[in-house]
Image (cartoon, rainbow, N blue to C red; front, side, top):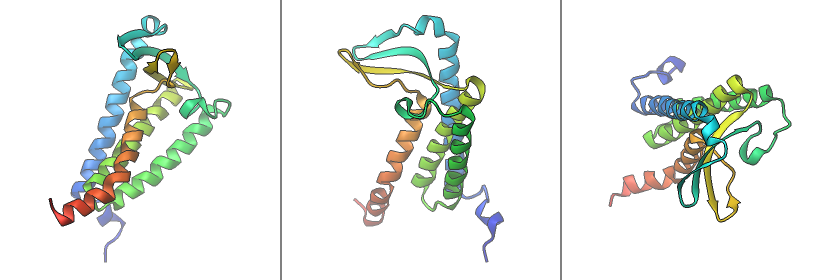
Length: 167
């Protein structure tokens, strides 16, 4: 009979992959945000990098697209921590390395934004994509990892079928 301790074994390759993904996503997110914060004055007006892309410095006290900006910062932390715990359970139970990688990326991204909320009561956003005068809401690497992880979860079943049936 397999118990909780067996499920938590770090020797499980998919769990190691998920944990590495979470730590890597958190490190990349916090590293890029530290560079942005260190250069906030120069980045605040927006610095053109490529046509259609600026680096900027913004603080978002809400979630995606600024939704729930009026919610207390701590409530967003509590909700995000709850989601991270739920995703960690799913990551531990994952039988696929792809799924574990995806859960890890989402967890790492969410933890990156949690760190910001604890430190600044808001999230640091700096990636600004636009077409002419229409700007997509600025975002950060944590958001990239969350969206990428969700995308990976969506294609994981297809990848599993491809792996079983071969090329």
